[in-house]
Length: 463
Image (tube, rainbow, N blue to C red):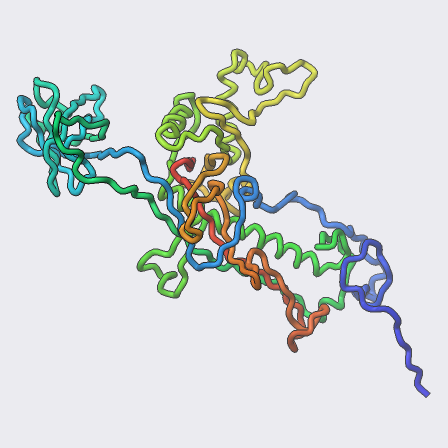
């Protein structure tokens, strides 16, 4: 009679903290022509260190749910009104004390006092009061009896074709007159973005799962010894990186693009938003004047007191060298970085921040240094971004109220029954899954999200 032999215990399909002889825990790779088995290292050598490039948005942003395919918010417009590149109407002779400006459908009203200036080195200007406004022109009576100044050498003797800037600084009315004609409505800038769906998948066949080798890997439950979990874990890490890099690099599909024709909308990532609505600085930080140019632009925007610079290695060294040159001993490097260096101390050749009008904190951005990501882009690359710290108040078009928001935040689709912030599930017919007749285990990853860049005018893109 045949004997039935039963093996007690279940096949161990999760990492074990110790090497336990269990069914399915063996690999057959023995050659009878070779009497020696190879010596193997059970732990992989991490030659690239921590390979993940994510962490930027976790440091400077926040995440919050949304329920719609479209996210809209409004940002405050400028409080005061200014018109640039205004053309002085032909025929405004130098002796004239009344001139006409070609401004179509302006918000300028009769009785307001304005300043007219050009952008030449001499900064020629004139002041006057608005006497009439039409759909295309604004008539101004000058306060200066000498007439129209020569705003620019671009124009002739009568200022023909001269381009000037105009801003309102007040108003003046005579006694016993009516009040201001017309009124102005607040005109906030409304922005929108749409979330995109990001997916990835890992698959291993049931047969390969039964051929288990002793390779130490980092699993979800800690360090373990199942070889195939290494690939699953790396897929998860790679997907988490893509969640961030998608929010940084995404661009909307153009009106006649091939992607839009196939039904893909794209999204506004950080770099696109800064190119479109932010400040752009090009060139190296070699002198304090280069920093002052950034500070001067911040003065014209929100004047955020604290800012964080996320830069690549080259720009980081540029800033270190610039700051070190401001020290009396910078040329010799005697106290380069730490100004109280002693002879027995390790010399600190870097700076973590500085103050020049505003506080700037400097940090390396690994994404810009990684050779497989932005660090491998030669020419026309991104050197870094300057991100304002803190939060800002915006009007949420969905909530219908003002809300405090960080300048950068990720909106992910979620409801009471479905959370798409970071979904993962297992399907197939192997590895404990029994959802289909597929002789494999599939691990699926999904997220649906968009990045909202609030107050992009306070950011700097370094190129």
